[in-house]
Image 1 (cartoon, rainbow, N blue to C red):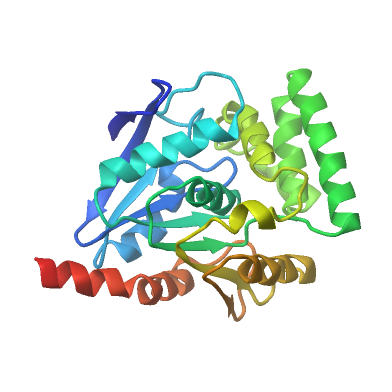
Image 2: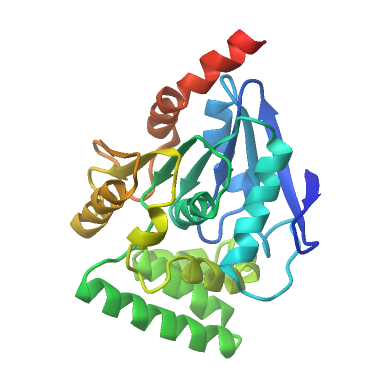
Length: 267
């Protein structure tokens, strides 16, 4: 993997593959660059796909201080390394990061996100507050396994499945990244969609959800799309929170196709 320094000097590791206009993939909670390997491979015939380890994960460094602004700077550094005309796709809380970066002035014209996990509404805000408080207690106590289990339960993973995961070889890797759950939690604020801040997002933005995702998740994506100045919404029939790469890739290719054609004309 290549590395680039973020604004605060933190090294951020990234991987580049394919040929075409640059497209940065931003992973969600606990993910690393390798998590997006299947999606990246499907997009690589049309794009130069850049995947990266968000700070505190994989081969990237970390300061140990949780701040949304630092992650925004990390993404800006990766986009800068990707080159002119870069587009961005963010998965789950990675979508929230991409939106925060765009609102802060990240120079992207096309942006797509899949189910950023905002929880608007009174019950949603109470749920987010409870989860944040519990996550902070678990991390303060050094209970990394408990923090991972909390995240899994929040995403709908059954207890028996989580128990099997605890016995799997991947569990120590998840625990090693558990402290970064606080970073994703911070990205989501109190759970409400920051409509005022996102009014500054200039990019044409596609907000995607799964047709089999929960009703609140689907409603949140529609609200988000309506809050964005150039937002549009799309539902993928038969998909849920864990979307199939082979279903998602054609949708992203279609949306980002304008840059493909411009890139070929320039070449």
